Amino acid sequence: MALTESNMIAIGTPAPNFHLKDTVSHNYYSLDDLKSKRATVIMFICNHCPFVIHVNSELVKMANEYKHKGVSFIAINSNDVDNYPEDAPDKMSIVAKVLKYPFPYLFDKRQEVAKAYDAACTPDFYVFDGDLKLSYRGRLDKSRPGNNEPLTGEDLRVAIDAALEGKVIEAQYPSAGCNIKWK
Image (cartoon, rainbow, N blue to C red; front, side, top):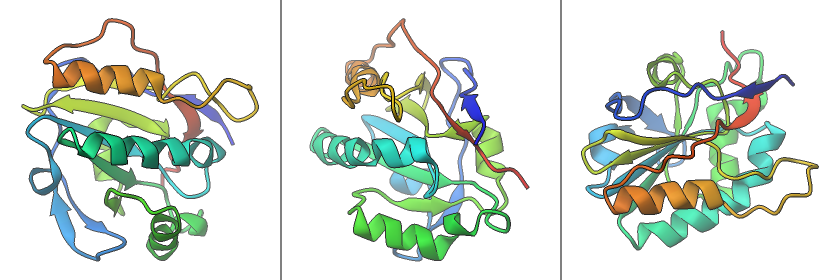
């Protein structure tokens, strides 16, 4: 596993649209179908990455908490499943059901969406305001597997709260995790 940091694309970048299959419902969704009028969190995750496994409980907690504030969460897996079969859509569906993901878990088979977002690692987080302009890109918090920092979601929470208030926070730190497994 290669530790990779997220790419820090420009604040204000518009969210690229997509049309991807949800691995649980088997329905296809676009960004317009899933976005929120208040704030939208897009997360690039996968099944096997220890960094994602480490934060899964906090992702579920946050998504459940913030849906009551009108925030949409969307998870996307863009990994090459030929070389990483544990990230295949059938396995994604199992993970989503077992962990009770309160958000769609979409599969980016052609990796076009990850490239459009300039995603680099899992997990990688993007917060978009109600106009789908980027207001945050980076980490969930300081916690990493084995570093003994508590899992709080602090950085992402601050970013979402700021987006709900129409603000952009100054301090933004890249996420770090496994690199996206490109074809």
